[in-house]
Image (cartoon, rainbow, N blue to C red; front, top):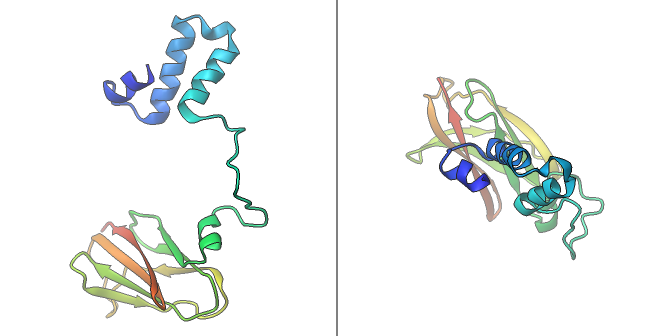
Length: 161
């Protein structure tokens, strides 16, 4: 039922899951058997009580596990698409002086943002959608690149005008 609703019904994952579970409950007599409903959920999504052995994330803040374990820079932006200001959060594994540049789809640098040059950890900066000369950047796709030494990370931003 789930696959049929996803493939033939063109429903989104959550809606297909809800509708297929409802269909099976009402048409196959599952309403009186909670274990069938749980089994259905576990088969699609996995058992939430299971854990993965060998990884100890004690003391690591939620949401930044990868950057803390690997010790690399990280970055993400929101909202995207954006109509105005774009918030950019970036992670530095140690105190350093990174650079953050915005490029258009042709690879031309649109803006060089002044970033925090202090302690390591998470920092935040905003981009108002303007170019280096202060004019508003046109609507479209832009790429931001955070560089620290030999390490760099890129992310995409979509501006709506």
